[in-house]
Amino acid sequence: MSLVDDARNGKITEEMKIVAADEGVEPEFVRRGIAAGRIVIPVSPYRDVKLCGIGNGLRTKVNASIGTSSDISDIDMEIEKARVAEEAGADTLMELSTGGDFLEIRRRVIENTTLSVGSVPLYQAFIEAARKHGSIVHMTEDDLFKATEDQAKLGTNFMAIHTGINNITLDRLKEHGRYGGLCSRGGAFMSAWMLHNEKENPLFSQFDYLIEILKEHEVVLSTGNGMRAGAVHDATDRAQIQELIINSELGDKAHKAGLQVIVEGPGHVPLDEIETNVKLMKAMSGGKPFYMLGPLVSDIAPGYDHIVTAIGASISSSVGCDFLCYVTPAEHLALPNAEDVRTGVMASRIAAHVGDMIKLGKRDQDLAMGRARQSLDWEKQYELALDPEHAKEIRNSRAPEDTDACTMCGDFCALKIVNQNYNLAK
Ligand code: SF4
Image 1: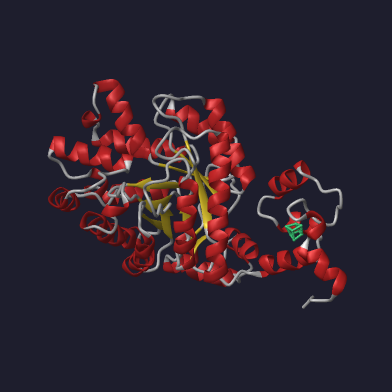
Image 2: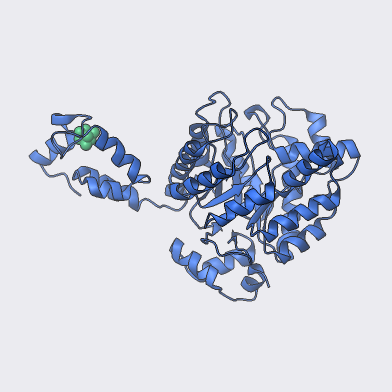
């Protein structure tokens, strides 16, 4: 029995109750959302996690992706990144290692976090083929399904699986071309394999088998965005939409079979196309939880891509996106370190909150902060801040002589002048 089966049978499980209490909604709301495919709760039969609901009517969630590369593979650093992501308030973690001993790295990261963990099993299958046989194109279909099963048994809660790249999607991509190529590693691996072997994507052609594996291990299917554009000029093109059509159809099939499903989206998207993308994804997928990677709204700010992303992510969450994948300042430049992870999580948490102020009308915390500022109540301000420690650190590093104000305006603190001369409180 999966969570979807329980929800369809009218059963409110402990997981649904916990998520409902955390979100301030009725358990029945969560049950209905799961039964209809609009909400997911990543769980695993292999380990307990800090439960988080993702989807319609719930707070926008933030994922932090970590993982080694072929150049930098340091397990301790990945464990530290996982710790920092959790401490900074990420809701989920994706472990995306492509260097070193994948299973061991993932096992250690999973052991050291209470968050739900996601993975992309095809990385492992393709890279092992490259190590053993000299090229990713020599991966076998069995390798792919075995990697999926191995990772599920480690307690992976959700998997990005590139089901929507089939021969038609690839034709669209090749016919139309791209200004900025393809920035999804999964998309690049799978398309190269398909073209070299002149074969259909096994994740598409053997989708029923994939459903069986994921259902057996209660893994949430996140339909991968393999056609993700790497440049804003390629956003919302035919290949991306073709992949979305296929993923929407497969998502329905998987949900019907009892799987929880998330639909992944782009990527690099200009500001004026974000709402279109979110609404299209929601309409096509029947309202499934939408997981947006970024989105980055410009391509010219390397070093500041967490800010570029936060701008796009605040718009996307305000119009209905449910789940944001963070971007760190190291994006497009280097493997992120722990400090990059912290900065990326905070930037996406801010964006998620800004979106929720519109999408869910969640403005109580902002109102309380306004009042705390008016009354110069610093302890209250720290309590309400998204990152209290950082706020304290800045204030304390340049502490005022007059403890009521701060050193920005010192003796001429506008709030203090008003408070001393008249009452403006509402
Ligand atoms: S000193 Fe200026 S910045 Fe600081 S609390 Fe007063 S008005 Fe705000």
